[in-house]
Structure formats: C-alpha cells, structure tokens
Length: 111
Image (tube, rainbow, N blue to C red; front, side, top):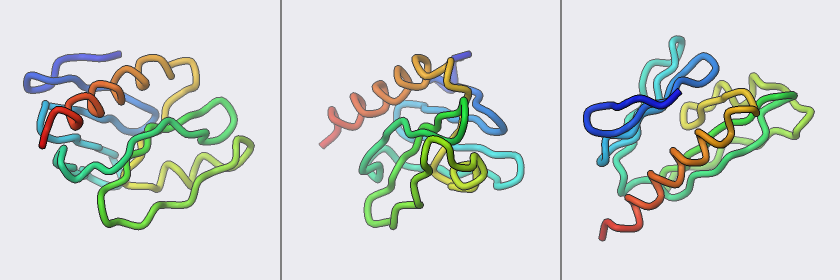
C-alpha cells in the first residue's frame, strides 16, 4: 500500500520498505538499517524475480557493483540481503512498478 512520505510516497514490502521524497530513495530493512540513495546517484531500477511468488524492486547506484541476480526458482534470501533491493509478493508488482516509474521519471527530469 502506497502512502505519502515527506511529499513523496512509501511502499511496504516483505520485511522492508522503500520511500521516495522527490530527491532521495530510502530503503529500510529491520535487520540492515536504512540506505539513502540521492536521485542523481541512481543508475538503474528494475523489478526482478526473487524466489517463488516473490519479486524485488532493485536499484543500482552509479559506480557500484551489481549484487547477483536470482533465478525465478532461487532463494529469496539472496535478494533480501541486497541493501539496494526491497522484496515483495508478486501480486503487488503493479504498485512497485508504478513506484519505480515515478523515481525514473523524476531522475530523467534532473540534469
């Protein structure tokens, strides 16, 4: 479920959440803390498979190595440990796709 976040939006995933305030993406996980990604540092964003019945919204920061991708029948844990990814149930892919598009659209408008 999406909600306003300091003038932006927030989505709760499976054991984590992602928020966007128009300038930064915030990825919060109970066991890993919070990662703040300034909009200008985001190189890519994508929805990837994250195990059976799960997907993930994954961001890549400019100049950072990519975490390994998971096969559709792979383990959720591999993606869940990625500090730049938030996992969610596959049925919520539309919400996360819309969130991702909002971030990418804002990034495209910035110099």
